Length: 316
Length: 204
Ligand code: HEM
Image 1 (cartoon, rainbow over the protein chains, first blue to last red):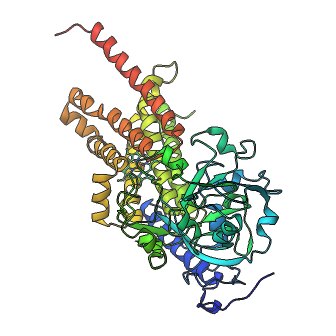
Image 2: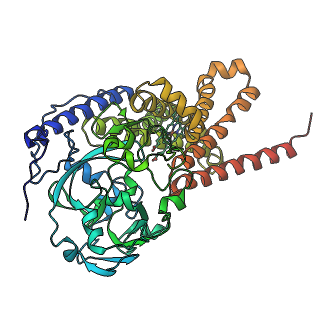
Image 3: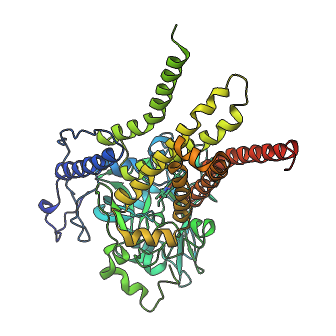
C-alpha cells in the first residue's frame, strides 16, 4: 500500500536514468581516454550511446535530493561489505548463498517491549517511501541512491524505550557459512554500530528494505539496513539482527579496529581528515573530477543543531 | 635452425610483450568501460600492483639465475627493472593526473600527512636514479662497483612499496604481507650472499 504525498520536487525534475547513464558513460570514457593515453595505447572512444531504464520514485519523500542518481548497476556492484570480502566486487560476487528470508530482529535493553520480532511484523503498518539520499563513503567516493524505507523513529516509538535509553546499538548477522568474509576474521565480527538516541530519532534516519523501488539485494544489506545520510557509509549498518537500547555509548566495530581513524560520530566532515584520505573532496561515482565534500554530507540544515556546542574535531 | 642471436631476440620480444600486456589490457578495459564503477581507483590499484610485482620479479632474478638452466635470466633483469619503473610512473601519473587532477595543494597535503602516500613517493623517488642510470653508457661512466652500490636501492624501493601497501589497507593485511614475505626472503638471500662473498674474498 503506497500513500502518495506531495513532494517539493516534481518527479519530472529527477534526471531520467537514461540521461545520466549517457553522461556518466561519457565521463567514464573521457577519463579513461586520458588514462588510455597515459598508458600509451590508442584508446578509441566508441559510441557513447547506451540504453538506460528510466526510473521514477512512486512515493517520493520531501527529503529527496534532485542530483543525478547513481545507476542501479553501480549501486549494486560497487560495495563495501566486508562480511563478503575486501574488494568492491566481492559483495555482489560472494553474497549469492545468503538467505535474507525468514528474518527476525531482536530488540533488547532499555525498552518496555523487548522481543524478537519477525521482519513482517516490524514492517506492518509502515509506509515505504523512496528516499533519494547522497551516500558518502569514508574512502572519498560518493553515490546518490534511491532507498526504499521508513523512518527508524517509527519503530523506536513502538518499542517504547525507557528514560535510561540514551543510545541505540545495532548488530549485523553473524553467518560465516554464508558470508565468506566473516571466516577471515580481519574485523571482530559481528559488525556493530551505534547512534545517539536523538540521531536515531531524526527524520532523516531510516531503515531501508529496498533501493530503486525493489527489495534490497544481498550485497546492499538485505533484508533490513540502516541509512544515516549525514554520516560516513560504514555507520549505515547492514543486515540488522539486533537493536539494543543502552545507557552508555556503544563501541562500534571500526572503533575497535582502528580507533585513531574511526570515531563514534563519524559525521561527514571535510575538515577532519582520515589517516589515509583527506576528506575535503570526494569523487561521485561516474564523475571524473572530484567535488568538494559538504559538512554533514550536505544535510547540515537538518542535523547540525544536533551537535551544537560539541567540538567536532574531537568528536569525529 | 635459427641462430642463437635470433633466438635471443625472439625471446626478448616475447618477454617484452608479456610485460607490456597488463598495461595494454588495462587500457583496453578502460576504453571499453569494462572496469568497475570507480575506474580511476581500478587503474591506480592495477598499476600499483604491477609496480610491486615487477620490483619483486627484478629482485627474484638474482637467486633464480643460479638455478640450473636459468643463468640467462640475468639478461632480463634490466628490462624487468625498467618495467617496474614504467608501471610506477603510470601509477604515480594516475594519482597525480586522474585521481587528484593536478591539484597541487591536495597532493602536497597527501604527501605530508598521509603516511602511505609518503612511503609510496619515497619508493618511487628511489626508482628514478636507477632508471636514469640504466643505460650501458651510464654503467661505464659510473664504474661497475659504484653502479652496483647505487642499484642496491632497488631493495629499499621495494621495501617502501610494501610499507606503502601495508599502510593503505584498512583491515586485511594478507596481500601486502605476502609481498613482504617474498621480499624478506630475497633480501635475506642477498645479505647471505654478501657475507659469503666477504668471507671468501680476502680484504685488500
Ligand atoms: C614503488 C612505488 C610504489 C609501489 C610499489 C606502489 C604499490 C601500490 C600497491 C600494491 C597498491 C595497492 C593496490 C591494491 O589495492 O590492489 C597501491 C595503491 C595506491 N598507491 Fe601506490 N605504489 C607506489 C607508489 C605510489 C606513489 C608515488 C603514489 C602517489 C603519490 C601512490 C599512490 C597510491 C594510491 C593513491 C593507491 C590507492 C589507495 C587506495 O586504494 O585508496 N603509490 N600502490
